[in-house]
Length: 258
Image (cartoon, rainbow, N blue to C red):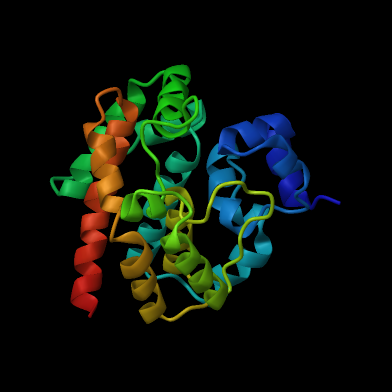
């Protein structure tokens, strides 16, 4: 039996099939849910407008009362969540409108936010959906393969994936049932980093840094740089610039933390 939060998300999306489409997974996967999986909460919130506190109050409401999040970590969590959402599925019209309202400042990350806002303001949802398909899905394969194994070894489902699975198990981070994507997909790694930053995962700061340095920083910056330089990318060129700028900041921050 579905819980109330999942029912609200399905209603807001316009049905199970539409919710599945908006977050980039198969309809049977969503049909099998009894509640929104922890690693899908951010994407469902962005796609439907149903707040994470309502989708999974067991994960978010008590945490926000008992342990307020540092503002810097809250901002980091939002940045990772945004990247996870944009990498997991093409943005809805509603999300594009929200992105168009972003403002920037003279910092590299601020300029990247402003560029993304401009790209969103001029985007046509159908064209962005096609761009996402060509970049990450394709007929057989997309122009880019957003997986750690591929970027680190040149092949899919290699040792980086098995190492990631072992570390996820040690941290208690579970694989989403019925999700066909390998766990080393960039969207999933960004969701995990968002969970670290907002305190959703019960892990010490050293575990967060170790996860980033082992599974994220060695390759994901190259993926974002490739998105920036891909000739046919328009909207996702701005997403790549944002991701690259943010990962550079994260890398520097974790380096100083050592």
